[in-house]
Length: 384
Length: 165
Image 1: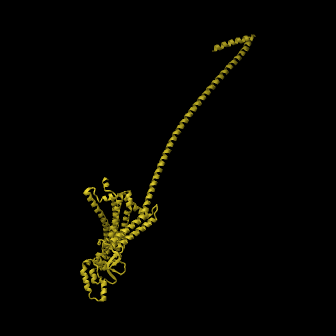
Image 2: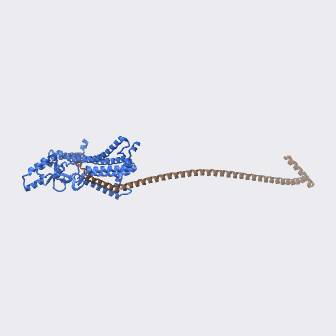
Image 3: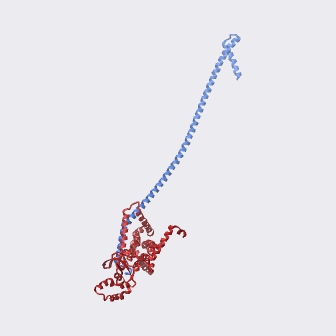
């Protein structure tokens, strides 16, 4: 240690790191309670469902809205398509660097598929397995880029209240403006009525303060000290300062796999394809015989029922394993950015890169394993 | 379901999105790249097989060459032996011939010598008879019948030769 501090270069680096650490502690959420907190913004409102970027249209099966996870999904698809086009254009017997990289990854998966499912079935399963892997990796890694979860539009208090089940929330800012035009007398009465009805729903919700009134907003450094509750907001009659507004950030981009719809979609596709392969490789009687089994007596029948349940369990575990991991990662990054801005997030970025690959690998490998299991009849397993 | 954010339109949208991605990647990436990789693997396999065959052929031709060399060596040795035998035989034949020639020559020479000697002896005898006659003539001074003398001398000589023998 003494040797390390003896060199002027090492000493200055150590001091710099210590200084950054002190600044980040003081600027973060911990420093905020001491009256600093100049770096930290409010912890963004964390919600499980994806946020709506643009209101869509009604369909017979529900409202279709443009979600921020859809935007990310399409971005990932566009990126992969562009890469595929570049590779396709430069394809040659002697591979270039990009082609060699793809051949390396594809070779790995192709060998894996062939070793697990056999040469014929491996070739059959490979496209889906590889697509799942590459999409999840790209989507997960995109999710930790700057700008994800931090740039978006501002949802006003009425929209937030709507989200929390209060459907007729009167925004005091607009309400007061209306009232001041036609007289001031009934204002307080109306307000108290609202608070009595809905305070239970909205008490725990904090509002964040954004400057500017444009369509684009980010959580600003130091905005944590300006955070206020719904109650404060109503007390202040919607006035949070000059040129500022209260609300929640609705990010335009959010990691695609933090939406249950995305992971459920992939899980459904994977399991449907697994059973399609099971049906086409084994024939419908053999494959369905695993689930509806009258031949081996009541125990066989019961095992069949268990198999059916386990197939649904697979969909659910697929869905929530990926969703849970990636969503937790996002929350972790947000919380670390909130507690220790600048440096707290760095080790966790590495962790998220790792988790992103591992989850992609798990999803694709499980698809492959389920597919190869579905393509083998039960009886033949016992003969092995 | 609402609290989790599952809604049917969103789910269907994501299923379609993933399906589109699957379709695009299958068409653009997997099919061409996998077939390319297969082709390359096939090519490499063929190349390896071809090199195996070439190595085998080389080994086989090496063997053939060795065999031929061995054959040639044996043949050469056989030829050398044969040549040596031939030469030996030839030498012996020649020697025998030469020996015969020499023998014949010797025999002929001996015969000639015999003849020469005989004739010389004859001549000498004649000469000697003449000399003896003249000597006797001179000694006895008697003119005897020449034929009577001859007979006398002849008999003397006969005696002397038989006596010398």
